[in-house]
Image 1: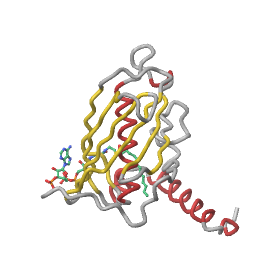
Image 2: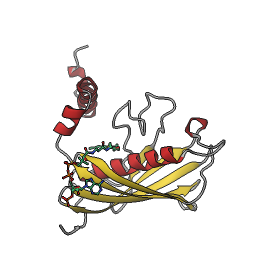
Image 3: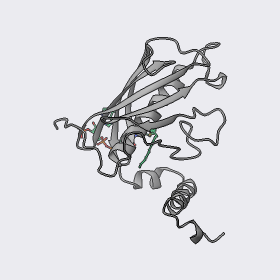
Length: 187
Ligand SMILES: CCCCCCCCCCCCCC(=O)SCCNC(=O)CCNC(=O)[C@H](O)C(C)(C)COP(=O)(O)OP(=O)(O)OC[C@H]1O[C@@H](n2cnc3c(N)ncnc32)[C@H](O)[C@@H]1OP(=O)(O)O
């Protein structure tokens, strides 16, 4: 099947939108686990998403340096967020390839610029570059990923139904607050 240019969903958030946390317990972006990556993302122009990841002592491999697996995790999150928010289509990572070009010290921030590259049926291609300590800093890590679109049953069949319900309830509550209907919540 030919790879086609990605078609951004008409209801995708607009450039400049801060994306927030998609699930409190997500290791990539959630705030429930102190040692998590706490990635913060916003929509950029032309099918891009910008994310920032600050490396702490909790993310070390060698003394004072980020663990490569956790850097890959940051890219999985940044790319997953790009696919999910721009296409508004449930998808999971099928393949993730990383190039580690420079060491990333504790205390540094990676500025990750992620983009959609194309789609072919259920396959979604995306890639990203991580710039060290400034949006135009040297590239320390690059990644390419294949996401595969799945039905919602992927998560209900393989995931945790109680956690999914917690997530659905939180999303419903956030929607009510956004629409000014928070008074409808019966405590
Ligand atoms: C508003 C919304 C906001 C949302 C924000 C969300 C943020 C989220 C942030 C979180 C981010 C974190 C995100 C995470 O961490 S997601 C968690 C990590 N990923 C997983 O757990 C996925 C586990 N794998 C599976 O479930 C299945 O294997 C999948 C579903 C991927 C495919 O099994 P399925 O049986 O369904 O499909 P298929 O096998 O017919 O494959 C379909 C097509 O894909 C091609 N293919 C598959 N794998 C590979 C591969 N490795 N290399 C090359 N190609 C591969 C395959 O050849 C075929 O192509 P073609 O033959 O049709 O040409």
